Image 1 (cartoon, helix red, strand yellow):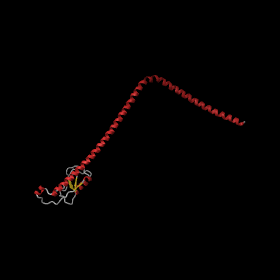
Image 2 (spheres, one colour):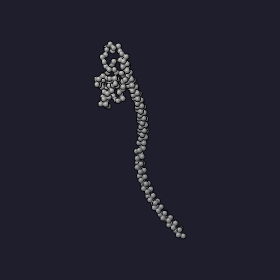
Image 3 (tube, one colour):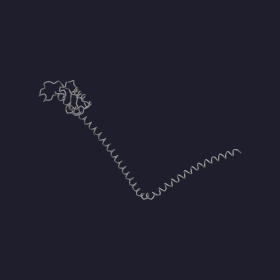
Image 4 (cartoon, helix red, strand yellow):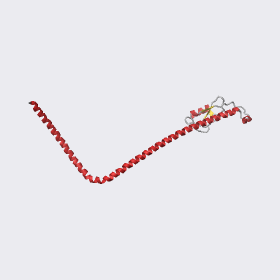
Length: 205
């Protein structure tokens, strides 16, 4: 029969103690690895190879029939008993299951990472195109502004004096307009008074 020894407590496993294996392939008795996980959580690592960190769901049961340890006959071991072959097959099946599970997890993670990278590339490409379009628009307006400034620079010097005269004229017109409005208000008041007097005179007849 195979001999199973826990690397934590160095005790042989009995028939009633369940086994637990980690993603790295190392196997321990359930009480020891559970105490190790609770004591060092959330930074618990494999006690044998320090792989990890390990979490509760990483503990996988290994269904192996373990018989009491007795005096083993070397020739019998060499020949390989059916129970020995069954135990080896069970462990190999458990390790294959762990390997397949890890490969599936890695494949899913790789696919998700590739999808995120593709989305990130699309976003970067979109931002790059938007930036290039904005730069082209800015360059267009800058060239247009420089052209207009060049064409109008000589006009600015010529119109400088005219603008000053126009400002003075505008000030004068504004004053005259204000005075005209005041006179209009005065005329309106007088007109209203005269209209009231005329109306009163007609009503007296």
